[in-house]
Length: 395
Image (cartoon, rainbow, N blue to C red; front, side, top):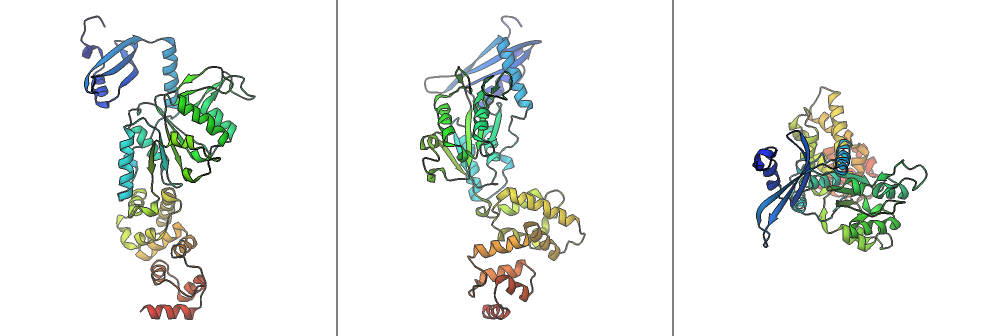
């Protein structure tokens, strides 16, 4: 590598083109050029109107500090600090799901913090990883932590890190916090609504100042991590003493609502086919599975559906008889017969023992379950005569 050589000859093929297509303002990576370890820095040049006019490439020798940083980044990647999911992993063709994904793709082009609202099991982390994977930070780490899974003191040390001697039992040499490990990447804070108020104030300062201080430390460390947080609680309706409004406004610059499965039209059938794609009969929807899947409200959302699919596949493998009656019994059994029955009654706001039985509910129960009239009357808490009279009037 000598002065006067064309840059395209010196640089590995495709590096400059990849940077230009990425749309990033700046990119720094380590490269091997003619058996030498160098740091290559691309900087995008724009005119006063923000129009792209060219690039600057800076090549420099790797300092010991940079070598140490690169080793740490490589170690982090080996730990699994990277996103595994993309938008293709979000299955669903419903309007609400398409709307949510379109919004997430749009937000991926920004570095602003994102707050994802959604019930348990809807796939909030998959959405967060997809945003990261589609952003200019995709080459950086993605680190997720469940804020509800750790006690306050442990969560604090995990987020902010600590210096050696900060507390008894700490790691020798201290430990970097997740804000540092997520440098140039994304930090995902799941169940953010569960953070203790005393910790919220410190988190707010980190978000405001873009810097962190270790527990027991005496120096300020600048950070550059995008924050994506998620919650199944309505933070705006929480008492301000439980969740600070100023923190909410820092987290909720961009907002996404990931809809529950019961509000996603026919997505439950699409997801069922996806999870049971390992050899399951796609025509089984004609055997009554579809009506059973749509009759259930799925309080556990996609996570619950995935578990049901595993049980259903196991039941189907245990018997070669796959007539429509058996197939329907398998899916009812996989969901849980009593759970499904109670869920249907709850949807119609019916309490066992009431004489006024909704006709639509009775029709649905009759189509899904293979109960005799005596069994159905007993489960509804009414007499067989009342049930018979209701069915006669329906006709």
